[in-house]
Image (tube, rainbow, N blue to C red; front, side):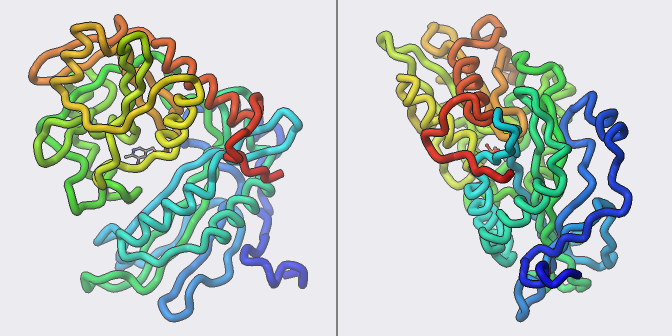
Length: 369
Ligand SMILES: *Cc1c(COP(=O)(O)O)cnc(C)c1O
């Protein structure tokens, strides 16, 4: 270890077998989502009483764990997702990573896990992106998807919060999340399953929420749909989210375009894309509202022409229009199943900002390289 590195929270130990340039180029030709990884990862251990230990950036690869590690039994696992984008000046910038660092700690607190200093979260990202900058793709819509993760590693079968944890950060060059691109999806409104209940973990980005959602997603597929739409657990009436994304509805009211998204009740995941779009929509001259919206209102507003679009949003897929809705109560289409102008506009505004093609008036872009 060189002396200059001993004070750094992340010690840099480069891989002795990074992919050669031709190999990297080959692997980056058909970018999907989340199946190729860069040469390195960051690992930071935590021990109760000692706090966070020395972080290490090292070769990407399997991690060793005791079979009794509590994450494998009781599921203390949280994650995040944000993206690094190539900028027109050749640099690289992340979109609102501080917001992800904050939300990571909100999730940690809910799962009785230790908080990670935001500065350490950001330093890990800076180190990994800097080291693996050749893996950042450059086309609009492409990015380096960053996946931070925290798991409970103590070997102990007693049911209690673990005394040991591991923070991991990996990076995956990514293209379109949905292979068909911005083609509108067909959704299934789930009334057999709920994603989150009051007092539960809906607002936390924890692994268990996803595990519990998969059977509903499979049911949606069986109904000929791409994604599941979640209703509130108590009334099974109000729309909460679509799959792992937040959802927006577009109304035309007395000549005004109104963008509506379900209000944050504690059972919804507070998306950073959702928050960004609320601000960007207002700047586009739309009215933006956070309120409850029921399935009945959805169907009625589509039928009488007041609702002209619906779309989902999240870091991975940015904006995905909803073209058709199916449920046990019936089916309907929105905007004849086509992408609407508001979804298209907001998608363009957000992507231009992220790729540095429009001025960053909000201070959302964090320059890394
Ligand atoms: C991550 C996530 C979102 C989207 O959040 P972003 O910060 O916009 O990526 C929405 N819903 C769920 C359930 C999620 O896990």
